[in-house]
Figure (spheres, rainbow, N blue to C red):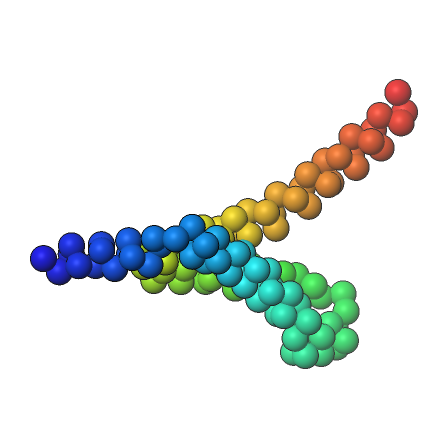
Length: 115
């Protein structure tokens, strides 16, 4: 009985397409904003001024932040508001794949100049 009530609450929340779109955009832009705010945080800027050549620590902290965000989203939001989880997953995949695609395109352009 209680499970049917939970399913009906989920169905009532996503009865409109605008709620799905809003949750997806909220997850997508929230992830990008979180990563951007971390990179612009005073602690991160202070660390780079102290040791400008040691950028791997900041990269590792950003990767840990992404992993924790994915874990949090997949465990707590998956049943109730699953489109936020889909937005977060899509943002992480896009932030990884788009630079790789640009790098591959530049590599192909540079390597084809010699032909």
